[in-house]
Image 1 (cartoon, one colour):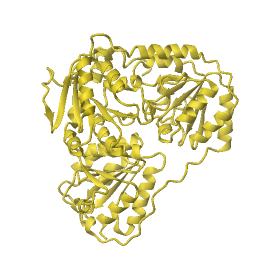
Image 2 (image 1 turned 90 degrees about the vertical axis):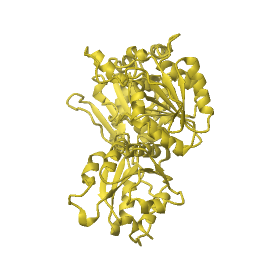
Image 3 (image 1 turned 60 degrees about the vertical axis):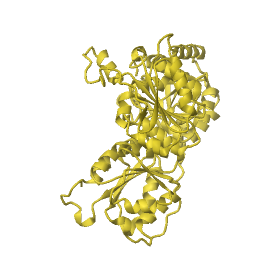
Image 4 (image 1 turned 30 degrees about the horizontal axis):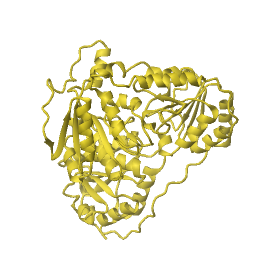
Length: 536
């Protein structure tokens, strides 16, 4: 068979159902190999979107997300989305077209060195060789799916798709199980934890990936201790649970810090500093770091750091087996802080701002739904205020933090879980970056609701400028509120400028068969008192 047929069959056998990208002339062989629609090629408006969609697809399915970009500008666009897979930890295979062997190193139209381009944004990058296809493809998926998960780039030499291949197919790739930490580390962890009177559990995105939520809650309940989360770990513990203390870094972070600063021990479980470094929020106390990789922290400042490197589930079971500690946490005071924090997220009467949007959306979106968001002021608010009913119920990029993520993330989520309600919240800045993907949404044809928070500003940066006492400049997207049109690339637009009109528009949008944009014209002044506070 041809290599193009070999590659598509290999990906299909690894569980890949979609490949995201923009085709090129050399990609035609691969398109022909996908004529059956298995896997399906999903045309996007910008290759970066393909990388974002592949990232989300990898999170939600466990199969590799696959994306493609052509030579040069296609690859550079793609690299933005691939970087998301690296820092937000998703198994992705990024494919690009490279020059044929006899033109490598030559000056040629569109050609740059893709191996050098992708090296800093992937776990591994290599150029496909016909005599090594079985090994290289097997290695690529193994590397992508092995902890810490991330992207692998494969350069496909021009013309390779039509070459004949006789290689066998690798089996379905299942990474080796994560080993437990060594007994000495586990025993030391038990000793340090048992002596603490105010330990704090700090939970990160590795815990989501490994499905540790139930055990984490049991540990918190057994020892009656608080839990803080990084934004991407939302959904692992209910916001009304007595141990819930809040989300680090995001809105009203100073209230969450009242709990952090009382701790005499921090226990990081699946904590990935790619979201928020330990030293950015931790008090000067010992740290037990339970994760698949060693702790990344300034050990000149934090001298008592205990690494427990292995599968966190094993360490959690050891903590669960201990006698309850002599906890000195005031859990009633924690409850009061938690309730006070959430009371601050109640919208004020007569104001239609982001708080109203979140409150009404939470009432309408089913508990099993998925909400994606972009990057901006709304992200900080969502990170704390949005009640997330299950892991991966709220999807954001907090490692890579690229504007433009929200819209393609929603597309990827809907393709990964077509029966699940999906909604995206984006600012008008993020929307402008990826408005072309409305054409993609129309082609996909599934019901996805895109909420555009329209305030005509890059609000997060404007607020940062204001807090520095500087003149605000370079953040105004439009001097007037843009006139709402009826459609964008065939996707209907429903305007809303009040709680009542927003509720009606949202209800209509979710009842539609295809994608719908809800343009929420908001008063963004609510952000000022809620985000960019101390300990953020």
